[in-house]
Image 1 (cartoon, helix red, strand yellow):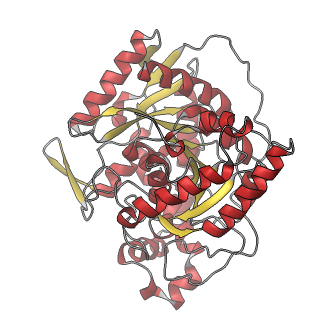
Image 2: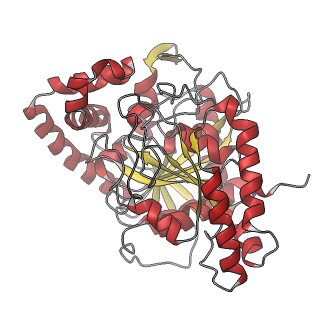
Length: 449
């Protein structure tokens, strides 16, 4: 079967654009046609920037023809989560609370994409204010899973993940406060990278929990994630001693992280670990001390921070919020200062515990999401004969690394028997995101051979 350009990776597309095998305008036109065909059923986009994308495409073609090729993102159609400012376009945060708020300038991450030559194709739907894991509480309606429209694609970067999974964008930017890049990446079968905390600017991005918020890419492969990460990061990463070896040791924190998994997710994960071992990776147990306290620590950090961010609008326009988001924001008003201070101490202890688990190892390996994509409207899930909160179970495997700031990436690792994607999460040392990407590329190769 011949693939359209929308089904290729950035790496393949970039070679074709640089050699002028294909024009940027042709790629943009094909991408816009894909959006027109697929998005009405999926609601991945809050706005499509068709006119400006076509204008930018024509300018890119002229520059490339004149020998002014900027690099592998030049002419590549990308989307961004509608939490990130794009100059002249409303930043809705998928909420009625903010309408209409038109951004005056691009967020730094968007400006850096434009400087690299990327074409902004549209802004993506999300769980309102990024405060949810399913993508269904939105002023634009729920984003739907591309393989099963009755299911959630994960959240909060729901539309971003769907845009990449369906070829409506070659890459996208999402945000991650408790797992909001990695969760939808796992649910939709794409790659999602949360860099080290502070490596990528959050200026011009509507905050949720400022000490937990991250911006990062969702892409079709790890190599593409590296390209976008390098374009948007604030500074070159701290140097690390690069080894020529691509195989090494992974630590698996089985206690807590593997205690509560859907049976099919567990089976896919264990098969992936076996394949990594067959590819000569050493996978050894690496428990994380205090992991069972991660949820409480993260809750007592996020709730008061989010409530403080929304204090004015929550007082002035409470009914404009969706009920679930409003409830969580109001709960933050009742977290005591001593609880927040205690959570900060817990964060430090957890950070040291993750560092200890990583000592002598290339990365940690664990599932990204404990369940397959859940049905829209679900609030609980059955695991091991017990009923679990859907929100809690979706955050269970990711939120710790927001509190500690370690870089983490989700890569596809297989399908359930009904064809729903599962994700494998790799966690690296702080400020060594490039090393984590090296490990992820090697693991990706082992899992796709």
